[in-house]
Length: 413
Image (tube, rainbow, N blue to C red; front, side, top):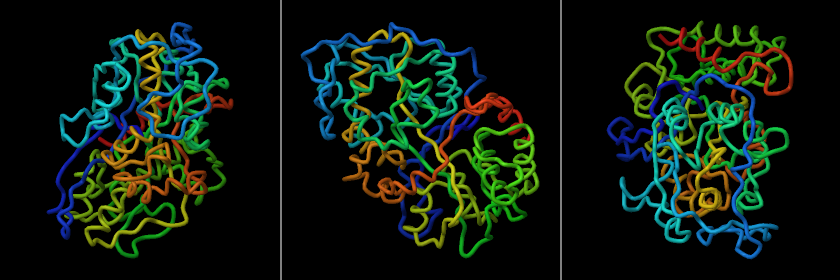
């Protein structure tokens, strides 16, 4: 989910705040806001990898079940790979010797990764515009912008062995496909839930009532308000919470504003959320399943609101429109789609892996709390896409992400 000018990943010891257990918050991922959309996409043929007819289609590092051999395979690596990602999404052992899923890739492919990490999508958009990167992992709002501007290339998924193991629901999200072409390989995903202490207030709009609440500090949190209105004001016909007409956007922002006040918390990082629920008047919040699990393991009686629709987001890997090292880039996409890479990434970030085969070892608990193997649950999540004036390509008159960002700025002063 998008956040304007926010930390993508914040790590903090929260045992004292949570009480029992002295738990350590391993990680919690958040996405950043992108800038305005640009001209329509124009893919570049220079993004095509050099192929051969004899080499293997998968990198040796993947532990996923081998995919059928593609008609073409990845050619010889160029030696170096420029990667742009969020902090925590790719670890090389600098934070912890136990968190290093970069070294195996380099050892098994011969591609040396030049890693550049950022904290917000605003920072990522700026870096990507000025740097010569081969691969990038944007949040949904920035991903949509990069596709629209032609800054990323369509992918040959035959060269990505782990792609077939990712659920169809994630592979076919509108933000990752356009005109029948695939632009993103799903990597990690999350869900926004309404959590509360004890019985708490009920109903889909409870988060926006008079009671003090904690809400993610993101323009895309407007979508959650629109989703609540879908239950309380069906006449608005807000079927897609991420593609809103001006009237629907007005109604969603109005709902958010009605419960605004000095006790409301707009949280940027997990530490702020936990403090709000532990030491302040807040008893209801927008949070991740990881947060709910954290509180429960600490002996806190937190519950998730049941029977209401939820929003989510998928962060993906994309190929630059004109990569200097397309073969190494495809080897990287192959690697990050595998269980070998997604398992430690999910355990480290507190998010769900896109590849269910990663649901073992240290990632098992994350897969359980996010219900990764529950296809019905996955089908019901409204995953984020960048708001656009053409209503996500369906035609009509909707509002753009820049409209959302401006309205959010006015709300959160």
